[in-house]
Image (tube, rainbow, N blue to C red; front, side, top):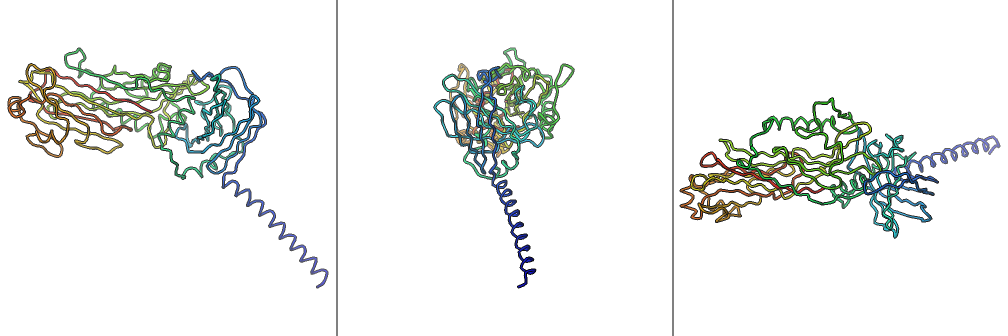
Amino acid sequence: MSSKIRKHLSRVLLFVMILNFFSGTQYKVHANQETGNLKFNKEYINGVYINNDICKELEENVEISNFNLTFNVDKAYLSFNILEEELHYDFELFPGMVFYGENNASIIGLTEIISNKYEVISFRIERKASDIGLMKHKLELQGKTVLHFAIKQKESGKVIYIQEFLENINFDTLLEPIQNIKKEYENKKILSKEYEYIFGNSFLKGDNTNTYSISTNDGKNINNFDLTNKELSEKSLEVLELLKTKEYIYGEKNLYIDQANTYSLFPMIDDSIFQSMTSYNKWSHNNEDKHRPYSYWQYYYMGTNNIATIIVVMSWIHNYNVTTGLVNSLAIAYNETVVYNPTTGALGCTALQDTNPVTVTDAILNTTINDDPSENCFLSLTQGETSRGKTYSFNSIISLMLRWIGNNTATKIWSTWSTIRGNASSSTADTIYFYESPALQKMYYEDGVVYSFNTETKYNLYEPGDGLSIAGATYIIPVDYTCSFSYTVTE
């Protein structure tokens, strides 16, 4: 073989080797990005102490050094030095459920590692950080991928909080491998944990049951309200449509509320409750509007004076009409988290993924005729319950009460559907009928007439439209009757 040919072959082999070298290097980088082996390292980070009782930023800073954060598929590994202590944490990553603004998302990390001196109270990453959750000295991070990390000193109770721009970390690369991984945690558990991370504390149970009763003879005019039920329902649908189209979502088309506005976020609810801290870390209940009872809970975003209000607004219908008789129904109208930034005046709702912030449990309705039992009674019964959009008839917990002249309390109680149907004069799929006069009911039932219905949800209520109802035709138009409700709220 000639020297010229050998030189030519050598050049070709060298060229092939160079191509293989570079293509191999590119492949490895691409593989690292696909598997999520991403790293964020910083020699020094300034954390701040915050007052965890009210989650507001304090002046005192704390230095964190050798901050190393590594992501690998659905895990994150964090190590750093703080106050002469070296800490290491492993986190399992989950898609978050709370976000603000267009095309935003979040990731939270859960850890089982327990330190003798510190407790993790937040590990959350936002794709595009919103001003609502940023401390004042970190507002320049708005719109960037930001890590929110907080630990609490067990001995002192002080909380050390950092908000750090994860430079060169692609959020979508972190999110993609965990979106389709099935986890043992339910949506509600993730939502509850994310709220803890955002607010720096967990919900306090407190008085989370709302009970109210109204009667025709107690000075509370049952039918005295500004809007008809139809008008109120139409306005509710308008708000729900605005929420669906993101008009009311914070960070989308920010809703600014000021004294010049003549409307409110929700009909019949004054926006002022969202703009001040009136129910700090506790449930409060408001029944001033007799058709729009609501329950709400408030907290500051950790390290800020921005307010979050978790609110469930109920629609309560309680009246008499000649078609259906005495009607008593309670349903969720809105189930939202409202956020308010006092610096900008922006007000709006949180966009939640596939869930609602509040669960309504143990909803109870009672309808009672207070007229003389020899003159009036219930002649029929219809009952329904809706949960997660599915409606059930005659499936809730029930009790019917009978009484007669001289008895202010029940002389007999029917507490099963089989007993009620067994004593009915007739029934259809929708309605159970009783004997058609007080005299006939006294003759057939012996212990008196049907004068009171009590029903309780069998299932929990979650979304707008979920509710409980009961109605019954009466012998004559009732002069004196009472309607009441009770429900319990949990996060």
